[in-house]
Length: 165
Image (cartoon, rainbow, N blue to C red; front, side, top):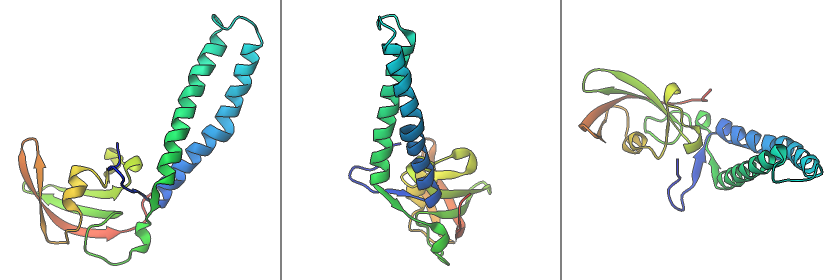
């Protein structure tokens, strides 16, 4: 998902560490091994039909592209730890929010960084339409979420700040 133009990349400490670990793995482990393989394949002669060389160069471009992406994301990162916010009934980045829709269904969402969003876990990006609708509201207030089928009312039942795992 894209970040807002000129915006900050809000992220939790664990999300930041996950991106940092991926960058280290690519840059310090995978890339050096791949460079060795490419050099070995290049020394075998004709490169036009050399599968190891062709695949290696392609994979190297993919790694370099991902490394550039990760570096930009980490450079723009603003680490926010929801566990240190303390008592607060207002929805901000890092909040875990329980809402009740007009059908009486309760759902819980944690508002996290763009690179951490995981629908299965209920982690939504802070730039998503749902999170944008909930931000700055308080427990007991009703959010009006625009959906493709119309406007949905969501009552905020609880707001907590905790370490996400």
